[in-house]
Amino acid sequence: MADDAVTDRFRAWLRERNLPVTAPRMAIADVLLHAERHYSAEEIEAELAARGTKVGTATVYRTIDVLVESGLVVERDFGEGFRRFEPARDIPHHEHLLCTSCGRVEEFRDERLERMTTLVAESRGFARQRHRLVIYGVCRDCQRGAVT
Figure (tube, rainbow, N blue to C red):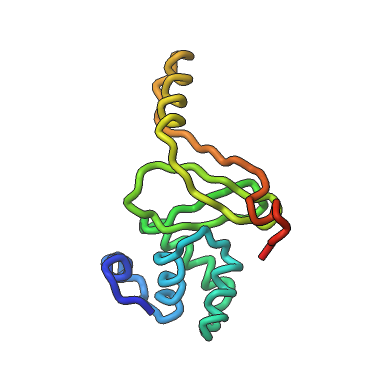
């Protein structure tokens, strides 16, 4: 399990609220706080099992809720019937590409899109606050038939 600044921030956040700092909770946090992709709860449980750590489904869901509440993890709903989660990194707003074949999620950022959403809102009398864009399609690997 990683011992770094973001993990330490979560541990401190728990202690400030008199919440238990347990091994299962920290193992779940380790997966999510260092994720390079968007995990579902089931994928977190599978990742922990692959690491040799058995954690109950209820514990995974409760810990995810705590991580989201802490502001260190962001919940995403791509309309798949389940939620995905990613670390709340100090990066600018970004969009997502979602492969409808394999479920892969890819992040991207495009300044032209940011400008366009502001222009569209302003042209209709809106003061834009935020937006969310998910582009659904088939990733390059699935198009080639190399589904992993």
